[in-house]
View 1 (cartoon, rainbow, N blue to C red):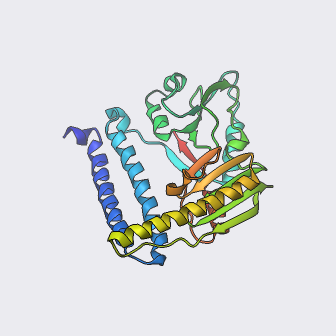
View 2 (tube, rainbow, N blue to C red):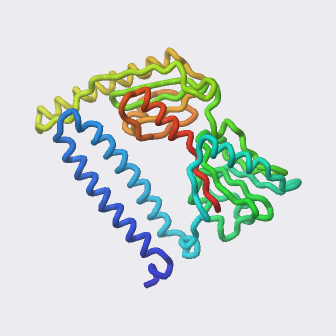
View 3 (spheres, rainbow, N blue to C red):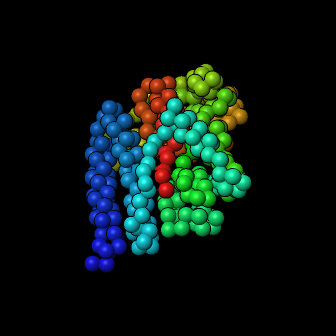
Length: 294
């Protein structure tokens, strides 16, 4: 009864639904391991969905433990921004003139800064849910939004007459290199004039799942691991040759950590098919900003 009144019952029911969907996907993964080469892509997609569901379940479990009044809060709206729409929203926020020390901008990662808590009051928990995010609030709370810039700066809290919104937090700048890494495909390009140029690709014939067990299965897995490792070495060689000043590394969660490169951002993404086209899709997804109306 208490959980129902506090809004927790709905969250717990949603968690149970997601747990069941996760178990279903895990059963699919087991089944996919028995398939031939054309099942590799399906298996990778299922793994990505399982990872996303685990993240979502953890988020919902955290919400169950939040304060009762926070559990009932909801943002006034959300929107995914890109292209002209993103530019229009940023321009509108930049046009706000709140007077001396009337506009608060904060990059929030862990914990809500005291200045934001004082200004937002009982709406402050929405910032914690949206984090990491860039928050813009004026002292009259006429403007109260959170954005998740793809290339966020280090945390800061700043009062000013206008909001601080650097363009290179949201858009790729000339010279920025983006690489997409999967266990059998790789593509890398460098931005020039807003477009990816000098695109290079690497494709490796990596063995698919094996249907037999025992020693044969172990030998197969070792061989596949060797092929993936060789592929990652080839990808790293391309990056070594290009030696980018600023690198965004996107791709398959299971291999991203194997690419030993300094990067301004590392993020798992869903991207399959032709490497060059997948790179464009992955970069498009990465440079999408989520707007939350607090």
